[in-house]
Image 1 (cartoon, one colour):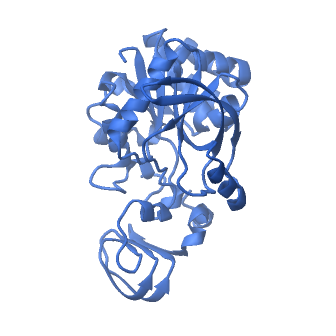
Image 2 (image 1 turned 90 degrees about the vertical axis):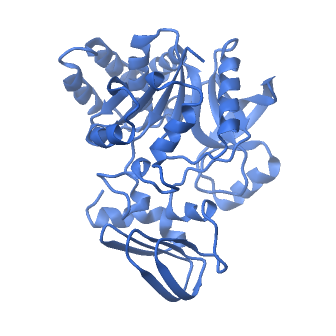
Image 3 (image 1 turned 60 degrees about the horizontal axis):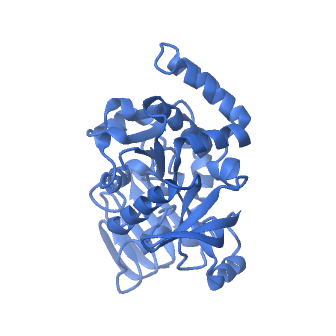
Length: 353
């Protein structure tokens, strides 16, 4: 593993966790699931395999002081700062430039900073086997998650033929990617056993992803090459800002993976959750006898199936069900659980995007 770097993507604004999260304190920097923040948990997980000097954190320049405070063990030069969010293709491309300057033969693990993975041993095994698979194959590896429910909020990967097996980890060709299907389709996918959730965790050679970006996203690649020419110079920050302002906002999945014939998927044997909305807490915390998730101070009667989160104030409920009720930072949220994925719509209305 001495040639592999980890790239932890820490962008996003966490609008679906308003009012706890926000522009100045997005989801990765929140202790949603315990004492440590989500980005701290992510770094702790990958440190089992990769030392701090090869962990790269990509984030907004605005969040750099916060990240340094939470991750003091990460060398300052390992923080890669984006002037604006341009989704994962630009994020990964920029990180690949910094890695390429250090080691032309490096490989890369790409992780989101705000996902939940509790089985660190199984995670480490899947990543290690994926790296071994790369030693004799020039593939783009995406980690798939075996579905446990007909989830409509995740992307799916249809598996093709089996390509190999390393230490019981099976690798398959990818037939296609499907974005957030309706419930009836997701239910059918679950029954077939031929689909995985797309976790957004990737393993590849740095040279492979760079070649793919140059082939499938030439405009982005040209801008990255301009940035590359100025890395380490007094013009670096200025050029990154200029080129990022031109970049299309597009994911690496849409920009590269859906177009490439080199993509393989390995169905992971660990539980995973992207903790995308307040309703995800039902899958993380234990429910009380009335199927409520309660974090913080709460007194209730005839309260069923609710998610109640209070940072410091008492929340009292009477005769309600299936609600998300949050009090944080002096602000209050009340919404039906079904509407929780659309929370960013109200965040935009109150001008906190």
